[in-house]
Length: 478
Image (tube, rainbow, N blue to C red):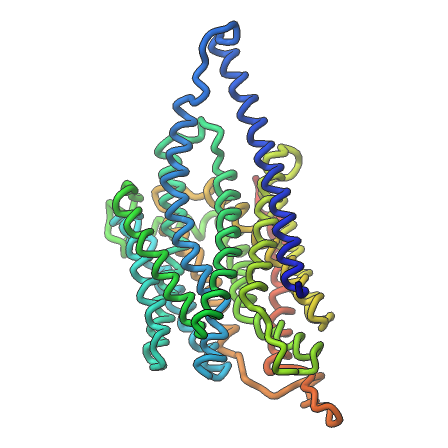
């Protein structure tokens, strides 16, 4: 096995161990809860005891309702992730500025749609918005079959709209449904659901990366994973249509353009503003990372292997490693929240933002391929801890009536942040310390295009994350 396969195997072992320990903790907690229930009902002395109380049945039903759809939708998203950049850059032979403009189009569409998709979902129903989300992503995936640049831009715009919907309405539907079913009385905690969501998402992402790599190998085209995404979204639509109930927000009672209350809540709450700042800087850095990790590893790989064309990076396996690291982070979050010690969601969020800052900064000072890869894995582990902690904090701070709308508004700043960064991307020359560098004896290219700009981006993101960490420590309260 090569270096990346060994790391993937190591992440599989690590996550298997963490999942087993989590299963034992949950089993022990269930047993403790049953014993307490027996004592309360005076059933310990030989009386029959129902091991599946109504609350636990409703919790199990809720998970069976939500997670199959969640798995299918996120599988569709993860199948595309490792191959978007290389599809545009290597298969369709587009220049890096054009690829950046395609990505920018997606983020612009995401930022623009964030103004209204949440309020429309609150008004017309989150279930209906989930169906629209699936349809939009299907059209976006089909657009990659064309080489027409105009259709590719339309596809990225649809992808941006679909991504905003995906990260807004599914979570809004889930949290509202959780509250309406009064599942707080069961042992299914909201923080546990968010931790499980990231764990499941990571497992799906690892599988999606490997399946995507196999599909590309079998078909010889990077379009294959996008068609596989369509095959995931169609059954997801069917399950949403047949099994999910509809829920609404307060904006269902008013015109979606007349929603000043959401803006007042967003701008007037210290907690929400702090979460918005953290979301802007961390998720903005994450999406810039998504754009830059592939060329960054290609650059380090070229430096380590003397730019030999035969040394092709296994992007699907690398992506699976990243998702394994993210899964480890989500498992650590769940374990930390279950321990009931001084670790809280706020403390975890602050630590995650700080460590992610260090991991991005380290890639600038260490140009080694393996060190860069491990720093990226550390960043992905931080992502795995960030989303459940952020989701839990938003679930506590934001009320159900404006949930989808506020979730959408919180996506606007970091979409703008990413658009500004990507709009400055240039093809450039081969740079090292500001000058073209080619080893005339061995004809080695020491640095791939855009390295200096990418390092500036990582440095800026690192600095912003440190600032956010300080703000969280001062302004955010549990």
